[in-house]
Image 1 (cartoon, rainbow, N blue to C red):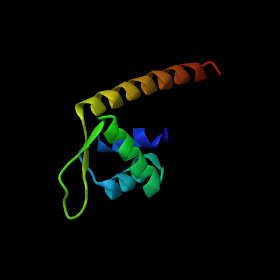
Image 2: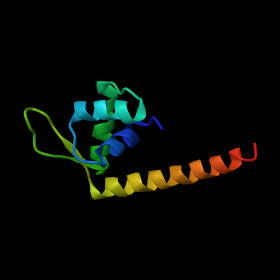
Image 3: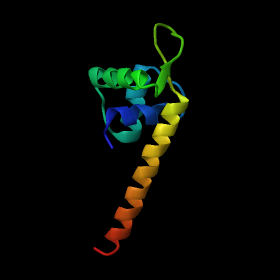
Length: 95
C-alpha cells in the first residue's frame, strides 16, 4: 500500500512525529520515499478530515499525532487489508 495518507496514519500509530521523522519512518517500514509536497499534502488532508492533529511546536518542528477518529480509520483500513491478504493467500494455495 503506497497511499500517502495511509502511510502517514501508519507512521503515527506508534506516536507523534514531525514531517521529516515521518518521511524517514515511512521509508524504513514501507520502502516508499514520500517527497515533501506529497507528505505535507497528505498531512493537510488528514488534518482537515480530523484524522490527525498537530501538537505544540518543538525546535521549529510541528509534530502530529493520530486523533481517535484517525486511529479508528487506520484500524478499519488494516482490517480490510487483512481480509484481502487472507483471501489472496487462501487462493494461492489452489493456484
